[in-house]
Figure 1: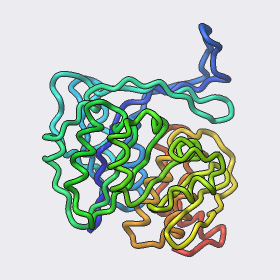
Figure 2: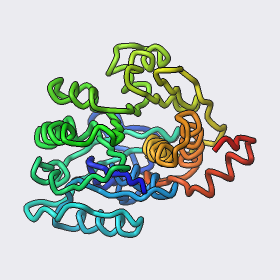
Figure 3: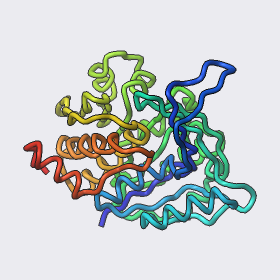
Figure 4: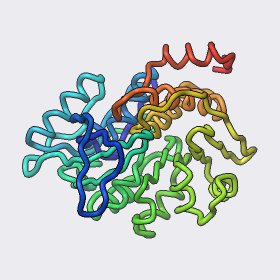
Amino acid sequence: MSRLVHVGQVIVDIVMYVPHLPERGGDVLASSGGTEVGGGFNVLTAAVRQGLTAAYGGMHGTGPLGDLARKRLAQEHVDVLQPKLSTMDTGFTVALIDADGERTFATTFGAEGQLRINDLRRIRVFPDDIVYVSGYGLALPVNGPAVCSWLSTVDSRNTVVLDPGPLAAEIPEAVLKPVLDRADWISCNEREARLLTGEDDPIKAVTELRRRNAIVRTGAGGCIVATAEEVVTVPSFPVEVVDTNGAGDAHTGAFIAGLADRLSPIQAARRANAAAALAVTRRGPAAAPTIEEVQKLLKETGDVAD
C-alpha cells in the first residue's frame, strides 16, 4: 500500500484577512484572522483526504505551537515519525490574505528547521512509498544538506516529488542539483518554474524541466504536465476565488494521491486541478476537499477520466 512520506516542515500559520497590504511602515486592520497549522501539513492533509496514507518525517517542537501541530496531525490521521525536539517550539508563518484572495507570507522557523541526518535515518521507507521534499527545507542550513544526503539512500524505485517552493532561488546549488537529479517529479507554480529555468513562458519552463517529469501550476489556467513523451495543458475549473492560501498544496497532495492510485499523470493532474479549484472557494490554508467532493466536481463537469 502506497504512503506519502513528507520530509518538509509542518508549521503554524497566523492568518489575517486584510483589504490590502500595508505600506512600508504602515498598518492595516484585518477583517478577521485565526491560527491554523500549515506548511507541510497542507500537502499531507490534501493527500489523506484523497485516500492516501501519509506520514510526517520532519521535526516538531516542545511548546504550544508544537502541541497544536501534533494535535492537528493526529486529527487528520497523519503518522508522526520523529520525537519532539525538547529545545525549541515549532515555528510559525504570518499570512496576509488580501481582498483578491492572494496571500503574502513572512516565516520564522523553529524545531522543524533542525532536521538532521540522524533524524532522517529513523525513517523506514517502504517499497511503494512516495517521498515529498520541500524547497523550504532545502533552503535551510541544517535541513538542506541532511535531506540531500539522505535522498541518496532512498531506493531508486521510490518516487520522489520535489516542490521547490517560493525559496527556490535561495537553495544552495550544492543541495539543489543532487535533489533535482534524484527527483522523479517537480511540482511548482509559474514563478518557481521561472526561478529554476530562467524562462518566463510556462510552456518553455516546463519543457526545460522535462528531463524529469514536471507539473507547473498556472492558477486559473490549470496546470501544464511534461513527461518524456508529451507536454499537455490541463485546464482548471471555473470557480469564485475566496482564498488562494494552500491551493498549491492541495494541488500537490491530490496529484501525489493520483500517482499513488496508478492514474496517468494527466488523470492525476485533472484530479489535482479539481482539488485546487475546490480549495480556493474556502477560507484557510488546509482547505483541501475530500475525494468524494473531487469526484463529484469531475462528474458534474463531465470529466470522469479517473
